[in-house]
Image (cartoon, rainbow over the protein chains, first blue to last red):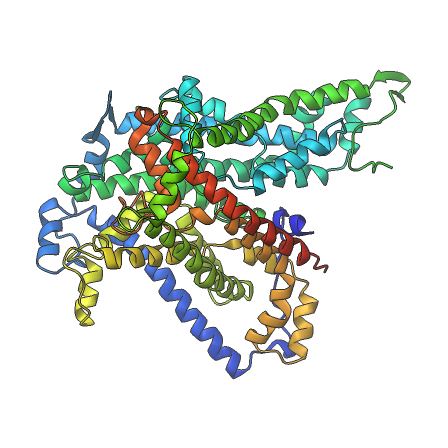
Length: 313
Length: 318
């Protein structure tokens, strides 16, 4: 019951009923007004710092510092310096073993996210499908092991994990992403498992009658049928990977993505964040645009289909 | 008895279709198919869980020269109890403080937001999206936006000056007494309202139950306490279980903030140890592993207790 309550894929839409009995009393109205004011303030507190950052990305470096010095942090740009956004594309570079510019970081972000999305959706789908729809010896044991591995937390494995991947030759090697993508028994496995359990076996029956086998069922029927699920997981995995800086900083330091790159560019005193803050702010804004665009395009699907919150890298 | 809607297996081997006999997958073929899908992920899980966790245990009992020792555990004890070298005590206290704030302030706030969004407060669709945005916008962007906002002479300081509140000259993020609380506030504002888990659980409650409460004249507060909260108890217990399981991860993204003074928590300490040492630290992660092992042993009974409670309270049927 608990699992089904948590991991159901579709919510029935709730609509407050409008009837004579449902009219709010004055006391309730006051509570709703107070709640609305709190919501509004909360939304402003969340959005304003980000908007302030974007606004300051259009200031000249001189105006940015003079505004701070003369106590005018809320001032608008005197001259809109659109050039800052151009400079974010052309002037930044990250010096590691090899020098990486904006386009290099963008390319690293794209292949990293691409691999993560393909493997992070397909592999759990395959494992969840096999576990949900087929009976074989050891199935219950594997399921129990998967649940145990998820619910028993082991701390301090960072050192052993790093040593293991280093000795495998996966440190600073893009194959690290492929290898770690082979794990198909994570949180998404449980959601997909519940989904496949609810699918009727009649589809497979029809394919068998037409002479198909189980691979035909999965790749020709189940995958196309699960497109909404694939899209939701794909989008969430993309967003998580796009924003993931920790993995790249530890395991792939010579392949900086935009997320790990902007982190490097904010540390130290002579980094872009301090030498030219408006250009750095422009870079941050540029980095947020792809995920925001995808979120806006899929927001209805994400908000209504996925009832598990806070997936983030 | 196997439900036909649940299993593809155990089907007859042949059936008639328009006069032709088509070959169906045999039971053996289906087992092979299933294993072809799970074998590699299962091996990965075994490597990742059993091997790496096993290596962590072994590392905890080894010194940098690969000799067996208890020194790592002695070091753990010393760094929690020695009056001069107890540098891990504040780190643990910070972790517990972040966890307490998350559970006792963040969770009630999540209930509050979820309840009014569920009740379709004016503009609820817009609020729902705005509150979820911190989960979408890169954390680095949110962190820098917040840091710059509270930077010395920045907008926050300006507001405080208007309100006649004195702030440390180096900025609240760089002062040991204020940095921790600044990060707690950041964490609260960016995560408490974006938890769509409770909202989703509430939206599954049958409207008839809510209407029955209305007929009985329940106020919004009474409705939440007596009708909604008992019905979303399974979700609440699952959230609590997940939070307790990852208790050491509680807290803000300290690393992205650049490790402000006095804010360190255990998870960040683990991460930073590996990040700062990298390959030069290989062979020297014994202390880190011993520390992790100690926390695992302390945390396990708590996790089992919460799991027991979660199972006890997860039998709500509606």
